[in-house]
Image 1 (cartoon, each protein chain N blue to C red):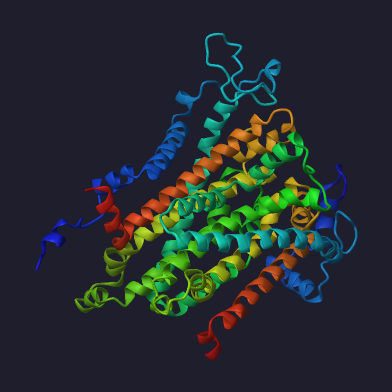
Image 2: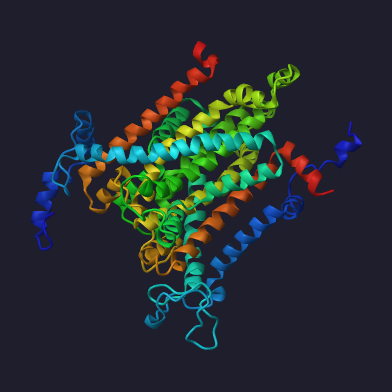
Length: 269
Length: 306
């Protein structure tokens, strides 16, 4: 910012201008004021207001997250329910290994391996960059795998609990088909833990995308955060963190609101 | 009255019963073996590694796996060499030391902080509980990787800072669990009895609460080691964790990234080792959970040790 060869005096002058020598509490108060005004100042790196820079990156992140979530959540719930339906069978074991693999997966390594096999060797997809199907497939798969495993695990255990409940016995006694019992009677009651973990996964995808977006050079908010950190661009870091925190809060709020719909007991309170 | 069935039932999951049960389950046995091997090679890296991890040889750059070594009598480069001609297997073995140390020590530190605060919150309740749990809530709303990046950004990268940061970032999970378990125990009759005979709070906490909340916390700790190893790898990959000339698995992947099309082994093997480590830790945690739950344990032991 001030060049390579500068006097200590000039450095201190710039630090003063930027407010970096103020006490922490003052700096925090200034940050709070900036956050309320939604104005975090100009980026050191781009020399333009920061918030528009962040907003501009949101569509890319939303696209990737939405694609990965729409893949992970339905498939995870389906696999978890299938495993719970036939516990301790080969199917259950296979799903179990699959979901444990997702939870243990090194996501950025998986990304590089997918690039190696499907982009470099086979040439089916692009190695990196922003665009349509050829660009999106590999990052979506990588981003979806860990949440898929986690959601499948939680669904399985919630469903196993639910299947021992008396109302399931009643449904069986009425002679309902097993499929109807599982997907209508059990799944809706097992939904609360599943929705909770899905919400957690959604917010972790909004920020876990830092690694994936970096590997695939996907121009979303995760990549921007990393670039801001690497360039020590304080206003830009502030703005990205603020926007990410807002997104997490919105997701958590949606999860809480969904409880009202899912569980009538909560609605009455 | 003690029926015959009661007498035949294993009383506790201590000692060799756990060991025997774990060894007799094939998947758990494999997981235990893999983790033990990785741990042993990390501890005895000097003895196990076939080559010097720092020895460079520019004529041996990016050699594929099983290339014979230039030193005629030593082992070939089993997993190939990296862009500076260093042996990948030896670097993985020495990297294990860094990655495991970071994972284990930060899990221990965050586990201690989180458990202590959680037990305090659950046992004393009131103001302490409110303060601690609000802190947990606040920190839970900031994504983990982002928080770690921010703290490392202001503290600067490096080994010690990494341990500190990972401990700060992950203590809440323990606090939540310790508090929940303590709250449940607090209302049980044996705690009332201990209060009635005049035990002090410290005595109740150490004699009655801690032994009862320990096992779920140990299981959580096993899972956390896996998570922390993954976080260390990610942070080092991004350049905010372990710094050169030290080596860790995440750093090796980041270093080999630009050669991925011509020398896949530099990236593939360190990642595979991280994956195997976290997978075996997750499997071990699952087995420990089955053993420590009395109902499941009985089913388990009856099946395994009969």
